[in-house]
Image (cartoon, rainbow, N blue to C red; front, side, top):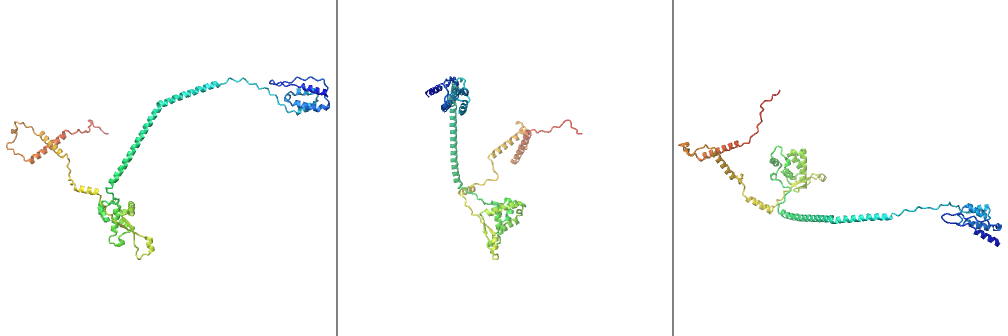
Length: 416
């Protein structure tokens, strides 16, 4: 038994070794021992050792043929070797070692130099732009903003002055307008205010086809109410709307036309909106039932004359001033009238002296009649005016502008 253990230890010592120099090389084939093969009792232990040997990391990647030959040398049979090899995990193909080329030199220094150059250019350009901005642009922008601010403040001050002046002007106007008389919205013209009936209004117009549009609506309604109430007493003196418009259409047939209908609408608006005309519900007659009266409900119109408004103090003063002023004459004399009269007399005198016959001073007595009677002043003035008129006519004839006359052709044109 000790001999067998020594043989097994020697056999296990002769196992192939693994060299790792980038690739696995098979171990040299073991020498064939001269010992005898193991007995059947140690076969199980031999198989377990062979299985452990094949699963060791140094042998698992070796070639199968080398493993088989080594196991045969150890005294194992072919079926046992096949069973042991079948129990092993599938062997992966051997991958050759990767060989990488030598990496190129790094470009980081060049990249850093480019970045440094770029940042230097950016820094220099930014510094130049900032210098130009603060040296040239910023002062101009500051002056422009200050000028705009001053203009805006000036505009605001002017607007404040304007608003204050407008407010003061409004106050002064309100104070001055309080003294002035206020216009009367429903005042009639003086020509129609004196009329008390519609025929008088038509007579005032004085035309065959009077222009009724020129008559104020308040005048027509007032005169119509006055005409309808003549000869009637109490409530019947106030006409209804239908009676009033029927009377106006009878006096003015123009109201029935298309244009007259629009004018009637104006009359109705004046009647219903003017505070001088008030509508009063008529009193029911004893014969009429209450239901009929409620259905009709006629409205009768009355005219309330406006109370005369007392004139304001300024109007009183203006009226007194106008009455105290002297009335102007019908013919107004200008300030240059006497000057024009003097120039006319002077022109007449010059004309008479120019067109008198020439008389020598020494022979003046020979031309004068012996029994000459002096002229009276009226004849002398008449002769002087005739001579002045003659001189003016001759002067105008002498200095008249030439008038263009149509030229007459020398050869008359003959028409076929």
